[in-house]
Length: 96
Image (cartoon, rainbow, N blue to C red; front, side, top):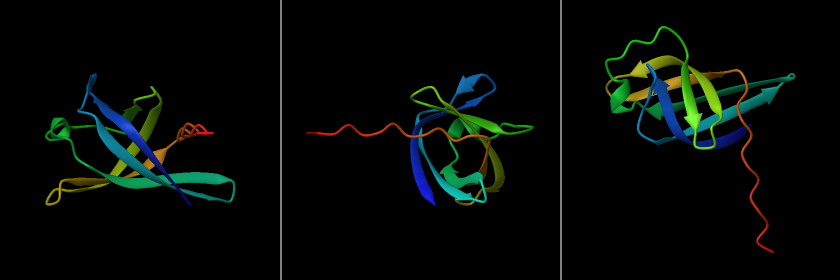
């Protein structure tokens, strides 16, 4: 298992939401990689109807496709699974 943290925004109907953090838990096994997680539903997403996966655009310009499997309206949280590849994180530079 591996955690990957991204900063960016969702693209909805051609517009981007406010910047937010997206944490993805990757499960790797049997030659496959699956990601899952939860995020606070941005205000711009409330009341919109999406007929399919959502696109999260990272600050680096990478796109992550997520499929929301459940909205918890009382908590304002969406639970998701990733679809396709999850970008690698940039390596930290050595301070030495």
